[in-house]
Every structure is written in structure tokens, then in C-alpha cells.
Image (cartoon, rainbow, N blue to C red; front, side):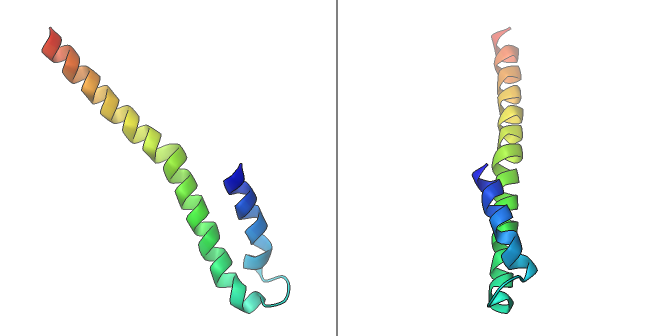
Length: 66
């Protein structure tokens, strides 16, 4: 929810509304891109990799145990 708030708050700066928009727009786009990528990384990629590693570990334990 915090990430979404930051992304939505940066949209006016990225679009170019307001004073100093020429200077702030590239920074806003970089912040939006960073927030989107880090959010996807922490909410999708890390749990998926953890699940794959745990599944392999459990199969290995089961094979050794039998």
C-alpha cells in the first residue's frame, strides 16, 4: 500500500504538471520505475524462489529418508 501511494504521488511530477517539471520529471520516472520493480521483486519473485527452493529441499529430504 505504501508503494502504491508513492507511485501515485509521483505521477503528477512524471507527467510534467507544475513548476520545475522539466527538472523533476526524470527523477519521478526513475522513482516510479524503482518502486514498481522493487515491489514486484519482493511480492512475486522472492516468494516464488523460496517456494521452489523449499520444494526441492523437501523432495531431497523425502528421498534420503526412504
